[in-house]
Length: 294
Image (cartoon, rainbow, N blue to C red; front, side, top):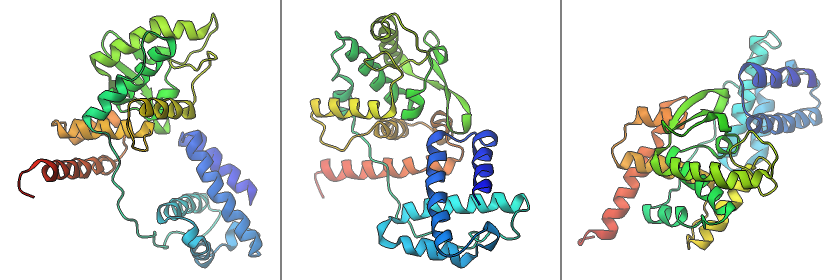
C-alpha cells in the first residue's frame, strides 16, 4: 500500500506542483487512514470500500471540526481518483460520501486604523525595523500569502515599475502590483537593512532573519504578533489577516472581483467571492455603530 502512496505524492509534487505544506497535509491525512485500514484488516487499496471510508470519517467524530473532516475526505477522494485513473482500483470508494455540513466562516480583517497602527509600529531607524516595515507594507499592499512572502527572491522584485513576480500555489507565477509606499519601504530595506542582515554573506531571498538566513513563515507570524501588541491591537492577528484586509479593503473601495482574483492568485473566483460577504458584513457593522437610529 505504501508504494501507491509514494506514487501519488510524486504525482502531486511533480505533475501538479503542490506546495510542501499541502503535501504534508495530504501525507498526514492518508497516513492516518492507512493505519486505520490496517487495524481493520485491510491489506490493499483494492479492498477499501465506501463503508471503510465512511467509518473512518465517523470515527473522527467530535474530535475534529467539520472543516477538518471535510479536508480529509477531499484528500481521500483525490487519492482514490488517482488510483482509479491509473487502473489500480475499479471504483473510487470515497466518491459518493457526502462532505460534512460546513458553516461559512468569514475571514477576519483589520480596520483601516488598525492597519495604520501596525504599519507605523516598526522603528525604521533600526535594521530589523526596516525589515518589519517592508514586510507589513508588502503584505497589505499586495495580498501575498505568508509562504509567498517568505520565499520571495530578490530577482522577483521590480522596484521601478512597482510590481512583484510571485510563485504561488501549484508553482503558478503571477504579477502583483505593490504601490508606492510599499515600494519605498522595500527599497529602504533592500539598500540598508537587508545588507546589514547579510553580514557579507549571501542569500537569494528578500526577507532575512537576524542570522542572515531566509525568514520562516513562523518568524513572520511572531514578528506580526509582537508589533500588534505594541500597536495595541487586541485581535488574534496573523499574516493571513493582512491578506484578508487587503482583499476586503480593495472591494470596499470599488475593485472588481476578477482583478482581485488575479492579484490573490485564486484558481476559482468562488474563492474570491467570500470577500464580498466580508465587505457587506463590515458595512452593516458600520451602519449599526454610527447610524443615529438603531
